[in-house]
Length: 181
Ligand code: IMP
Ligand code: MG
Figure 1 (tube, rainbow, N blue to C red):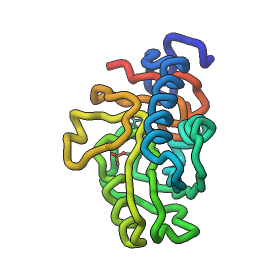
Figure 2 (figure 1 turned 90 degrees about the vertical axis):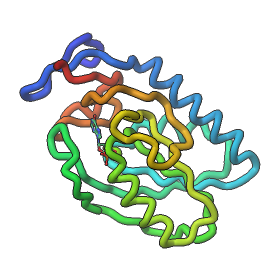
Figure 3 (figure 1 turned 180 degrees about the vertical axis):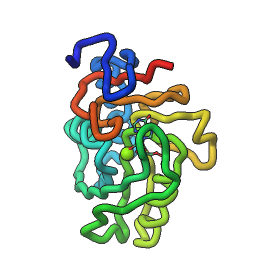
């Protein structure tokens, strides 16, 4: 199933958009930038579940730094669009005070999730906060604030695979697929 050009999930058809090999190159690029920027320092990777689990796994294996990991579970999407309200399903379990935090997202669309998370993080007085995302829907997000590490800027299309879902389906796919208009 996961090597197909086209897949069907519920009522939608999706076409192959980014192959596993390209995705891995994007993750490798981000890891290289983080390794260079934090050379000799410790980073706290703050992963945003559920969608970021695959990028987290591939990214962390490439970090040559002292790394600690915190995970939060946030939910904003219903079907193929942002509901506009963020629900925190699992929060932080340790303090971020004085930590050098890198938030890791699968995809940034409206940026509502990120804004919510940045407030949560800043309340804890970290030393620094940067943001990494595999995919950025630039047209939607605009340039409200800088995203430090971007794997790929993509058009405003709904995508699934490599951790990202449509109504809970498609997260296990190794390639990324975009909805057929
Ligand atoms: P935002 O709050 O609109 O920026 O959306 C952030 C979250 O919604 C992401 O971390 C994803 O989990 C999910 N999301 C946004 N766009 C997509 C998409 O195209 N496919 C699947 N999930 C998405
Ligand atoms: Mg996400």
